[in-house]
Every structure is written in C-alpha cells, then in structure tokens.
Image (cartoon, rainbow, N blue to C red; front, side):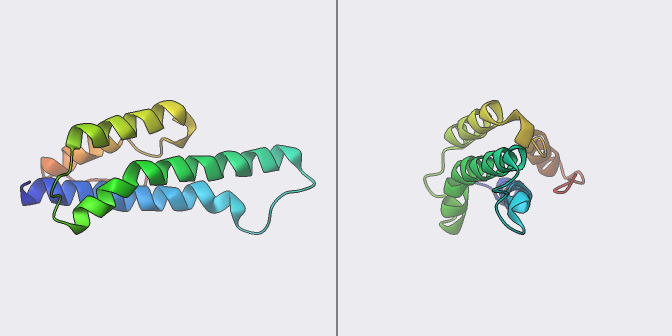
Length: 111
C-alpha cells in the first residue's frame, strides 16, 4: 500500500481514537445510579465506544505491520456496520475525510 493511503488511514485512526474518548466522556465522574435517563445515556456511550473500537482495532494492528494483509473492503464494511448501528455516534464521515486526505486537502479530525 502506498504511503499516501497509509497516511490517510492513520489520520482516520487518530480521529477515531478521539471519538472513542468523546463516546466515553459521559463516564467522567461516576455512574448515574439515581438518574436512570443518564445511566441509559452512559450505557449507550460505552456500547458505542466498544463498537467503534472494534471497528478500528484491526486498522491499528495492520498499521503496526505496514498494512500487510490489510483488507480495505473489510475495513470499510466494518465502518459501515458501525455507522448503521450507531447513527448517533457519527462524529465525522470517515470515508469522506479519508478521501480528502488522499487528495491532499485539509482534513478535520475534530468537528
């Protein structure tokens, strides 16, 4: 895989890690035992973080090994599945920002 594609993948991986942090921000402090509406929000955020992490984990692993054996098609299927299951967690359009990075345009990892 050429260096530009690797760089674009690393850029969205970096963004995804930031987004996992945002998913889990509702846990700063403590669990909302006495506020059921808040605890549902916390559980949803934790599930979203887990699924986002799962979608991006293989990317991180393959990046460590210079993307040897990496399947772009499988990766984008995983991202699409995540976005379908968690439309409320779409902090950015990963595919669009990936393409922008490939074209050498400015990208926004934090929206």
